[in-house]
Amino acid sequence: MHPSPKRARNPIARVNGIAINESVLLPEELRQRACTELLRQAAQHVGLLNAADTASTDGAISEAATAAIEALLEHELHVPEPAEAECRRYYSAHAAQYHTGERVHLRHILFAVTPGVDVVKLRKRAEAALLDVRCHDGQAGAGNDDAFGKSARELSNCPSGAEGGDLGWVEAADCAPEFAREVFGHAEIGVLPRLVHSRFGLHVVDVRARQPGESQSFEAVRNAVALALRRQTYVTAMRQYLMLLAGKASVEGVELDASDTPLVQ
Image 1 (tube, rainbow, N blue to C red):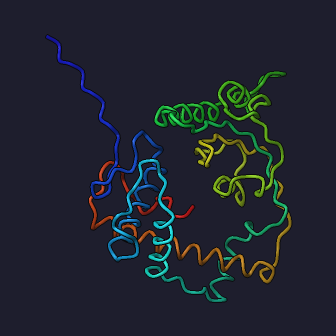
Image 2 (image 1 turned 60 degrees about the vertical axis):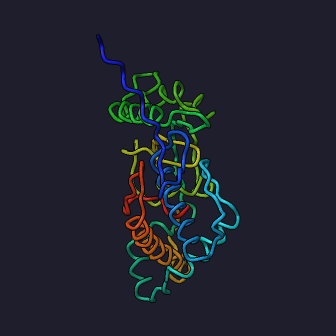
Image 3 (image 1 turned 90 degrees about the vertical axis):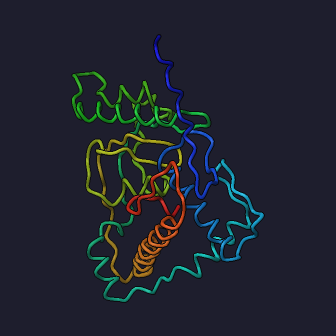
């Protein structure tokens, strides 16, 4: 007699027994939901949110929960104003981020995350495509499409796939912020060695050329630099607070790592 095959485990994650999903999600989205649920429960614990407020497995929370979490974070997180010297050091180290008119010539292959899609299989397909095009980066036969263009035509869920994934010259404002952060303000040329995540899905990205734009003086971008430093401090404080909450909670089915948890959207 052959043993019966094991049934697949239901990939449900829970925070203190509360389910936060009902289907397989990308790890980043699952961590985001877990963090939100930790904060929602913390707001209830300190009396900022009615105990009758309930969680949802679709990732949405109530307006009352959103307001309560904001009030909780305002009370718990303290973000001081950065000093002038600190701002100048940051500007010197990140001057490329404060160029105006930076443009990048891009191609991409989009693996779209749509309702009902198996994200584990989708990620494996995206990773296989990334490996393939990196192995053949720049190898195009005479008069023939290269590996990237061929893969884009066959695999991409973006209309640009018909053009080999070519998006042309774009600026940061043309892209989703999370996509722009991975592409702009860097020096990389060629197929990026990592998948780029955005609200639309997973992207294999080929940077064909860069135009750096014009540099701006520190005085012109002082406020933007201070904002970046405040955001940096806020994210650090948020990570520490969330890991404190996680340490006191029962978290099942999701790994919370302070180094890569997507805390700020």
